Image (cartoon, rainbow, N blue to C red):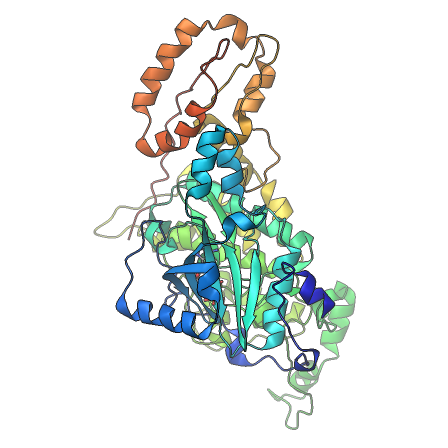
Length: 549
Ligand SMILES: Nc1ncnc2c1ncn2[C@@H]1O[C@H](COP(=O)(O)OP(=O)(O)OP(=O)(O)O)[C@@H](O)[C@H]1O
Ligand SMILES: [Mg+2]
């Protein structure tokens, strides 16, 4: 319990009584996160402050029952309703009384501000997300979520825990409020270049989570809050997360091929087959139990097949489902009633042969007598063309995937790999050509700003560049830094008189949202003697041409 207390600011302990923490069987209902179609995850925006009467009543009830919460926070709106919690947007009334190292935006924004604007900025409201965890959640589950969030506090692209409170049986977690868009509003319009940025951010989060040996277990669009303007997102909701290795029992997937074949050839199944019957008459074996926590449609085959040694790679499969959703413009892509249905949906794509092999890998037998499932399955290319109406019929001519989509599909094969041992890891994914290209593209699109501080030193304001992924923690130098390193002669060859008109022309061409990002940099101390500014025109981005259904 001492550990539980260290999670929080000194005066804000959560008392989780030791007696309450006991091993309990995870109930089916507690394992299943909300159906993607039912989830709220609505578009969140700072102007989103119109509150429905029912929500107003709900917030009033919350303030009444959670004594003292309104002294710390002003509830603004309900922004999410999940299976395990309700999430509210609130203003942090005590912001200035605490150290707020979690607030990356504040840190970045105030970096170049004058003391006066910094003072003004400190008076502006600071928002948080208050996650009210339903009292029906088991204490061990609540404790687990808070503990893992605390462990991940410094991880890139993971929404950190600010603090947590308890009043009677009610626990609330306080997280930084992250502005994002509802996935359903943008996934159909995403170009492949947008997908690269999305997955670079998501894999940055997963790399950090997996490095700590934590499996998220519930990777899906509503748990990755993505800001399409800033091309960055944060992973939330560690309610189902667990440490890899928790409750592991031997599974056939951990054996060598030879041992596995031996086991299979001596299994009860092999004996019943040899006896000419289809199933054993008196089966005394206990049913197999494994963690199945997650959301339907996003569960990896090994979860559906009850593998007892699940690893972080189950999250990678879920990411694959998100990419398939984007490329096929279908959400939710898989929509099954139960695990058997889910296995059959996967069979539709990968075919019976692959599913038999996958099941055997985990010591299970997969059989189906549904004739429509083909032996070899279909290629992902074909599935995407079907879903986007490009296979050709009387109304539409046949079309191929474009080059960018083909690259995305190559990456998709690495994510939707049925054998978890062969599936790409988050760290490898970030090095995959599909995601590496995100760096090249963002470098060529980036508006490069150079501030030449003196004739001797060339110091670009790299940390503040709009498209630099500071929150994603990428260690790659921004293009500004790279170019500055390669062209130190710039300040000698470009006199101020030439550069200034370029800036004026370019600023007119920039969109208003870009201008909003640029303004803080323009306000930075650039006007003093010797400073120059160069804004490079972005190259037009290629269009992927995915047909919208
Ligand atoms: N830090 C945050 N900033 C902004 N919105 C948030 C934040 N955290 C959560 N939300 C919103 O609340 C929704 C539900 O949050 P979360 O996933 O943590 O709860 P949950 O009850 O575990 O959900 P589920 O079981 O459906 O996955 C999110 O999808 C998101 O829309
Ligand atoms: Mg969620």
